[in-house]
Image (cartoon, rainbow, N blue to C red):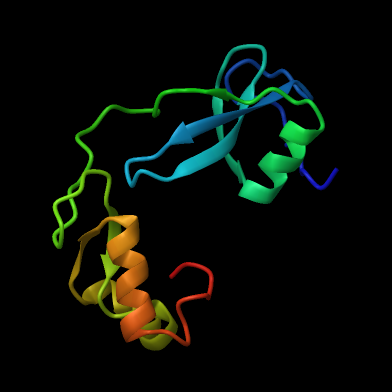
Length: 130
C-alpha cells in the first residue's frame, strides 16, 4: 500500500502507530483525508491524496467523516455566489512567484476556479498549487 502513515507520536497523548484516516470537507468545499490519532482523536496536519484514500478503502480500511476542525462561515464565490469557495490568486504563483501574494485574491467555487484556469492559464493550471 502506498499510504505513508505518520511515524511520529501523537502530540496530545504520545501514542505512536495508532492512526485512523478520516474524511473532512474543508471550508473550500473540498473533501480532504487526514490522519487522526486512534487513541485520543487528535488531528494531524498530514493529509493523503484521493488515490491513496481510494486504495485504503479498497484494502478494507474504514474512513469515517468528521466535522471541520473549526466551524466558520464558508466563503461564497464572487462570480456565482456558491457557498464553499476557495481562495484564488489572480496573479498565479507559477508566473509571479512569491509576488503573487501581493496581488488581489478572492474566493471562487471549484467550478469557477477550474473555468478561470482553463481559460486564462490553460498551460499552467495542471501544476500543483494552482
